[in-house]
Structures are given as C-alpha cells and as structure tokens.
Image (tube, rainbow, N blue to C red):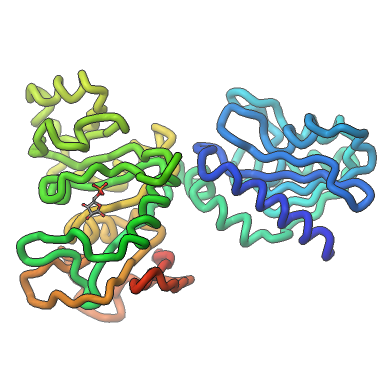
Length: 363
Ligand code: RP5
C-alpha cells in the first residue's frame, strides 16, 4: 500500500537517527498511525534504552485502540538483559495492525515475534522496504547470525592500484573529502583493525575526527610487540586491543600496556588466524570492524575469508613501478577465473576520487 511505504520510510528515517550507536543492538525506528495520522514515534537510541516500539507506545498521548504500528524490524518476543519483550507492549496497547520491514534474524526471534502477534489476532504485514532495512542493519545481521563482526576492507589507492611509494609514503593518496568519509565510517564501526607494519610506518591515531563522532576500538596485530609504547595506538583513549604472539606474553611491555588499559589477546599459531580473531572480537560484542592496513593485511584478510564489504577509494594519481606497494599483496591467484569477485557495486565520485563499494562473493 502507498501509505505503508510512506510511514515505513518515516520509520527508517527515525531508525537512522541512532547514528550507528546502538551496537550490539540493531537500529530500529517505529511510527504509530491512527486514522491516517502519525500519533507517536520512537527509535532505539542505545543498547539498554527502550526499543523503538516501546518508546513509541510509551510516548503516545492518545488511545492506541485500532492503531497501526510501523516498525523497521520484527518486534522482539524475548527479554534481553535490560528490556522487556516488545510483543507484550504491542499486544496490551490496542494496536491492531503491525507493518514490519524485515524479520529479525536473531535466532531468539526470527519469526516468533510475528507469530505471537498473529496469535493475538493482530494483522501483520511483512517486507515493506525490506532491502533498505537490511542494508541499514548489515552489521547487526552478520553479527547476530554468526557472532562475528561485519568486516569492511577499506583501501585508498592510485589509479594503478598502489597504496604507497617504494619508500612507504602514503599520506595522502586520496582527497580530504574521501578521508572525511573514512572518519565517518570509523565513527560507525565498533572497531578498526590494523597491523604493526602500517602502525610503524605512519604512527596513525586511528580515531574519528568527525565532530561528536565516537572512536572505534583499535585492534592492532603486533605479534612481536614491535610498536613503541609512545605510539598513538598504545596511548588510550580510545581503547586498544593488542594481538600478540604468546611467546611475548612475559615481555615487560605487556604489563605496561595492560596498566594503560590495553587489552592483550594472544595466539600460538605461526600467524594470527583472522577467523579466530573475529570470533574473539565477537565475544566482546564487536559487531562491525573496518580494516585499514597495508598490502599484506589486505591480502591476508581477503584470503582468510573474513571480508564482507570493500570500500575502494581510487585517486587520480599514478605511482607506477614494481617496488611501490600494491593495494593487495601476498598470495596470488594463478588463474583469472579463480579471482575474488565483488558484487552489488556502487560507484560514487568524491571530489576527484572514485569510491567503489561492493560485497565479496563468498564461495
Ligand atoms: C590510514 O589511516 C592511512 O594509511 C594511515 O595509516 C592512517 C592515518 O590515520 P590517522 O592518523 O589519520 O588516524 O588509512
């Protein structure tokens, strides 16, 4: 129905107001409509605070008898750590019709919320702006179904695919506007992953310099603890997790880092297993992560199969040469038909740069 689309659009707009601050929860918006008019609205602001539907129901100033609820995600039917089930609030409110954009992929819900509402005689319509709702919560969907973060691999490169000159100069390849967008993404993801090569070369801060933006947790692969203690990444805030080889656990640096609030995660294999690391981060409720590394980490992440989405910024520059750093180094595919494939491409012009976004086709 035309009206359903109209009101769901408003609910999606409200959901976005949370500005990626609801982790590990999804961003959800809700609108209550009676006699063709919006009588109440709500959105989920932060984990621990009321869900969108509950907020809209609570803030309604008139009777909800016979009203329609528009909500961007299926209402929950379970009690989480702090909030009661939204289905109870809906059933008790007098709302007779519920329009949802998408089912909640959380195994604790996944259709059960809808079933419960139907059992109480409430009409439920599904799938209005489903794709938009799914896109909005791509971090949450990956996390709640796999308990590992949604991973974005960001690469800033020249037109010939280089990320640095032979002597490692990389500041800056892309325009200020592109870098600002990267800072915006930093403020949306829960964590940023990099490795000691990039950190030793650039001494990056890995913070978000967006006004009012939150900083991501920094996850730094530093197996041999090569990064000096006075480097930005080891000077919280924001917080940092150092991923260290177990043979270095008795190093005095570990104690110093821990006294600064740096968390140490250790591994025993020759190289850190990124699939394992993603599980460890998932246990810490990291639902999304952006990789900002060099040729080796970019390659390693792709080959490890942890990357979900690519954001490739291409600047109108050419460095050339075999000794300059390629965007993706390391292992190669011998045959073209085996190459990594990217789908659902979106192309944008940002200043003079081009941003290509796409999702990795998984085998
Ligand atoms: C990366 O961001 C660059 O290659 C550089 O290593 C880093 C700089 O980060 P900030 O110090 O600006 O936070 O993409």
